[in-house]
Length: 155
Image (cartoon, rainbow, N blue to C red; front, top):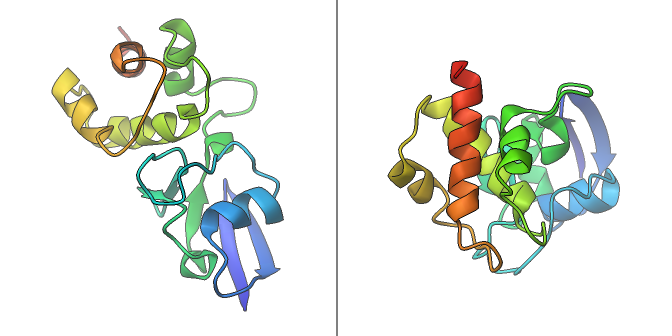
C-alpha cells in the first residue's frame, strides 16, 4: 500500500506492506533510529512517538494507520542546534543512564508539558506509567521533566 506521512515536518510517500509496524517504518524505511524497539508487547514504552500530537506506542500502530497523519519522533524535538527543554532537562538532571528508554520518556514528557504547563510529580508519574526504565528508579526522570517545565516557564 502507498502511504503519505509527515514525519518531523517532512513529507514521505512510501510503499509499505499492510502489516508493517510504525516503529519499523520509522527505523527501517526512514532511518530514524531514535525511536527504539523494545518488548514487542507494548509494555515498555521505548517506542513512543506522537501521532497527530498524541503519544502512541509505535509498536502497536501499523504504518498504514499513520497515512495522512503527522508523526513526531525524538529526532523532531530539537529545533536546529538548540535542544528542546525536555532534552535539556534530561541532560541537566541526569534523566538517563543506559539511554534505551530515553526517547520514549522524552516524547511522553513533551506531550505532558504541551498539555500541562506545570505538572506535579504525580502528574509526571501518571504520564510515565506505561513506560519502563530498568536503570534510573525514575527520580531523575521526574526531576528532568520538572526542570523542563521550569525552563519553559522562564524560571
